[in-house]
Image (cartoon, rainbow, N blue to C red; front, side, top):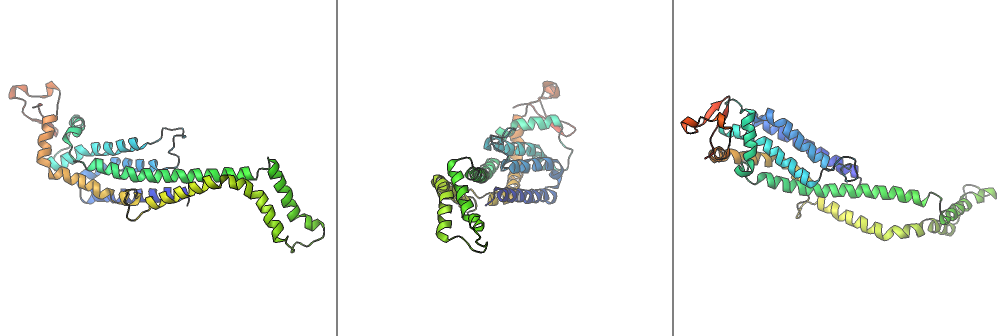
Length: 295
C-alpha cells in the first residue's frame, strides 16, 4: 500500500470536512462565518501538513509535531472565542474592538468558554493523525529500503554479484552461441540454481527484519483503518466528525452565555485611563467594546 494513497486519503477527508465546517458556519452561524473562515482554513491545513511525508525531523523546515498540532487547535479556538462571545452575548451589535478582543484572548484559559470540547477534539484528532503519520512514514521508509536494497543487490560491486552475472550470462546467452534456438529454454533445475545463487543469499539476510517490518505495518494498517476502533486511531472517523464537534463547542458557549459573560467581566483588565473610576468602574461602551474593572 502506497504512502501516497494514505496521504491523499487524509487530504481528501480534511478538505471534505473543511467544506462541511465552512458550510456549517455559512448556514448556522452566519454572523461568525466571515471572521472564522481564515482560522478554519488554517486549522485544516495544519492537519494536512501534519501527515505529509515531508513532515519529518530530517526535513529542512521545523517538523510539525503533535505538540505543535495541539497548539494549532488551541489557537483556533482562541481565535474563535471573541467571535463566539459576540455571537452569544451581543448578537446584532457592532463588532468588538481589537483591544477588547486582545483582552478576551487573555481570559480564555480561565473562562473556558467551550468547556473541555477543544481539548477533547485535539486529543482525538491528534491521536488518530499521529497513527496515520507514523504509518505514512513507515511506508515511505519501506519504499526507500526496497529501492536501496534493489540497487545493492544488482549494482555488480561484490564477488557474489559478479558470479551472479556470469551465471545469468551462461543461462541466457551461451546456448545461443552454441546454436541452440531462442525458443529452447534452459532446464528448470539450472534456472532454479541460478536464481537461488543470485537472490537467496542476499535476500535471506533481510528476510527476518523485513518480515517483522511488514507484520508491524499490517497491524498498524488494521488499527488505523479499523471499523470498531477500540484504540481511537481511525483518522477517517475523527476528521469526519470534526465539524460536528466544533459546533458542539460553539453551542456550549451559547448555552452558557450568561455565566460566560459574568466570568469574562470578572477577568478583564483594561488600562486605567479607559475606566470611569469616578462612577465606580461601571461598564462603558466605545464602538462595541465593553470596559470593566476587575472585581
